[in-house]
Length: 194
Image 1 (tube, rainbow, N blue to C red):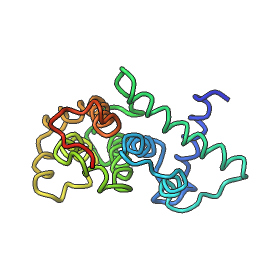
Image 2 (cartoon, helix red, strand yellow):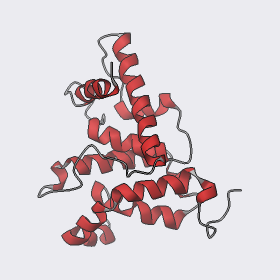
Image 3 (cartoon, rainbow, N blue to C red):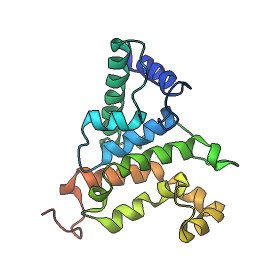
C-alpha cells in the first residue's frame, strides 16, 4: 500500500465518529505530530499514541491497530523530514481561520499542535523560552485556546494581524525545528545546553 493510501485510511479512521470525543481528528493529529517532530525530547511512541486517542479505539483487528499506529509513526517521520528539508512544510488544511474560526480546520490543526506541546511543555521552553514563545505565538493565536487571556483577546480582535500571523506558520515551524532539533545551528546568543 502506498503512503498516500495509508494516509487516506488513517484519515478515514481518525475522522470517524466512533472515536472518543477527545481523540484528535486527522487534521488535529497532523498538528500534534508536527509538534512531536519538533519537540526537543523524544516522547515515547506508546505515550503519544495513547494520548492522541484519549482512550483506546475499538479496532476491528490487531492488523488494523498495527496499520493505524504504524501509519501515525510514518506520518510523524514524514513531517520531520519535511521540517528538516529545504521546503516549507505542508499543512493538511488552508492557512485561514475563515468567518467561523472555531469551525476551521486550521483551528483544529493549531489545537492539535498545542496538545503536542503540552505533552512536554517544560522541555519546549527550557533552553530558549523567549524565542520559542515568539515562534509559537501564531499557533497559540490560531488555536483559540488562550483567547480568555487579555493579550490574546486583543490580538484575536485584529483580523489583519491574525491573518498575517497565520500566514507565517509554515516558516515558523521550520524555525522552531531548527531551534529545538539542530542546536549547532542555533544563533550564538542562545545559552548552551547544560
